[in-house]
Length: 163
Image 1 (cartoon, rainbow, N blue to C red):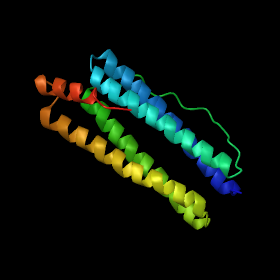
Image 2: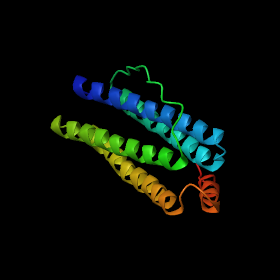
Image 3: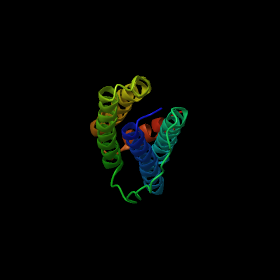
Image 4: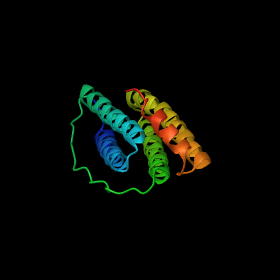
């Protein structure tokens, strides 16, 4: 059985993951509206990943006898600026998620909730990958700028991301 404290914290993280999915869908639509179909695709795949992250936490919570308490997901903005700004905001968001996952992991340790700690280890590792991937894209965008053919090459490359 999961503690009420851990149950509440997991429900909060589920909400955060769902908000991330909404944010990335909004960013995807913004990129598509600005003719960056590759970045739109990349962000759409990212949104699907965030939905899967929430689903994985939901199943874990239910498997532990916890109660799912869905909350309203705040609406994201509709405008995000240039593609560089979109991806910088994505990196900033992922860094914030890393902090929240780290705090959740620490709570699991404090609670001596080993099952949650083991499950959350996957999320800790996932966040390292997320930050590295988005950081690389941001670095590439800064290297090529937002004018000229190179940004369209990167857009094409982002469109090849698999699910």
